Image (cartoon, rainbow, N blue to C red):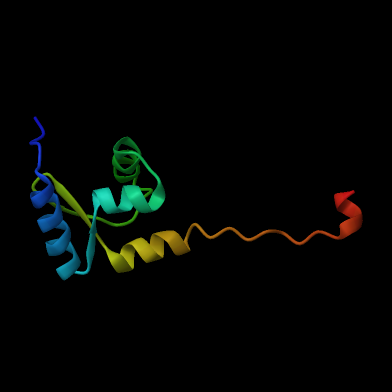
Length: 85
């Protein structure tokens, strides 16, 4: 059963993660506009950023999140204007 955390606990975890140059799972969810189920599915499928599991907590190194985001960059294909009409 998941323990309910106080606002102070959440903030303390974020400060500790920041001091380790990491993001929390909640931070990644906010950044990616994703649900907890989505980030959990990414981890299970090996599709999300590399992560660190400590107990029941998941942390992501900022560098790994940046690499994950860089891998998702989409570039528009340039098409001549005639083809668009």
